Amino acid sequence: MPSAEDTPAAPTIADVARAASVSKTTASDALRGHGRVSGATREAVLAAARQLGYAPNRNARSLRTSVTETIALHIPEFLTSAEYYMGFVFGVAEQAARAGLNVTLISSGHLPQHSAIPQVDGLVLCDPVAGDPVVDQLMNANLPVVTAERYVGEAQPTGIIWSDHAQLTTQLLDHLRDAGARRPAFLASDTTSDWATTLLDTHAEWCAAHDLPVLVGKAPFSASPDVLQRTVRDMLARSPEIDALICGADGAAAAVLPEIRAAGRTVGQDILLASCVDSSAMRMAEPPITSIDLRPRVMGAECARLLCEILTGDAEPGTTRTLSIEMKIRDSTRW
Image (cartoon, rainbow, N blue to C red; front, side, top):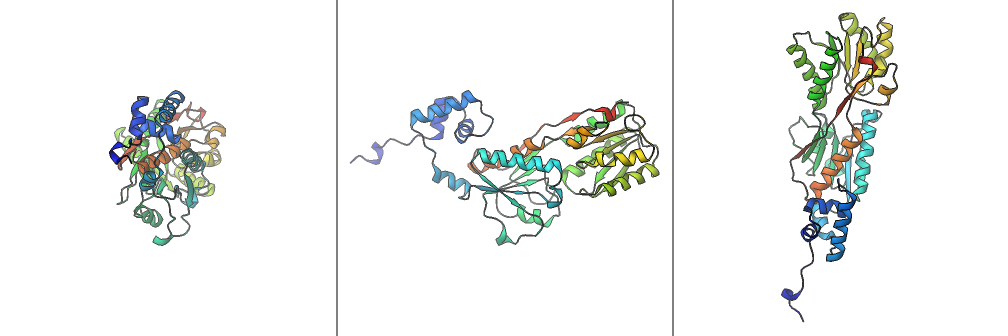
C-alpha cells in the first residue's frame, strides 16, 4: 500500500493560478464565475483547472463561508419605494446569484431578537443610519458585514463600498456658480447617515468658502411630496434671493417642481434645480434635472462582491473600496 508520502497532493487554487499565470484572486473569481475577469482569462483558468484535475474543496469553502450559502440584505422599509434602493437590491441579487448565493431580505419593520436574526453567512447594509436599533443589532450580530457607504455608529463593518459624495457635491455647487447662481440653497434630509451628513456639511463648507449664507431646509428622508413642497415654499418665502436649489433625497427635486412654479419661478431661467440622486424622474422632468448618478445597481453588486470575497478569504476584513460617481448636467441648470 502506498504511504501518504507517495500519494500526490491534490492541486490547489494556487497551482491553478500559477498554471494560468494569474493571481489567486483572479483564479478564484474565474472558477466561481464572478468578478471582473475577461472571457479569455476565465477560459485560461478553467483550462488550467481541467489539466491539473483541480476540484474546489467545498468542505474548506464551508469552513470559510459557513453552510447556508445565503447572505442577507437590510434596507429600511420606508426607503423601498425609492428608485435608488430598488436598483441597489437588484445589484446585490444579481451578483450573489453569480456567486451561487441566495439573498434574504431583512425587514426593519420589526426589531429582531438575537435568536431571530436569519441564519446567513453575512450581511449587506445599505446606507446604514446611526442610532437605528435594527442596524445596531445587525452590526453586532457577529457576522461579516459590508456597508454601502460608511457607518458613523460605534461598530465597524467588515468591509465598505463608498463614493466620494463631498467631491461630487462640490463639483455640483461649482457648476451652479459657473451657471450664474449666487445663493444656492440645499433641501436636506434629516437622517444621520454618512451620506446625508456629508452632503449637508459639504454645502455648508462650500458656502463658507465663498462667503455666502448657508440656506438650508430639512425634511424627513421619506417625506411625501406635500411635505417637500411645503418645505420649499417656506424656504423661498424666507429667502427669496435663492437662485439655485439642490435636493438631497431621491425624487425630491421632481416633487418640488410644482411648488417652484407656484412661487412664480422658472427652472432654468431665474432658479436652477439639481438633485443629489439621479433617477428616471430626473431624466423625464420638464426641464430634465441635473443630477449625480450614484450607480445604485453597480453599488449593490460591488457590496455583494466584497462580501463574497471576505467570506472566501479573497479579501481582508477591513477592506474599503471606492465606487466612482458622476454628474449629469441637464437643462435645469442651464441659463
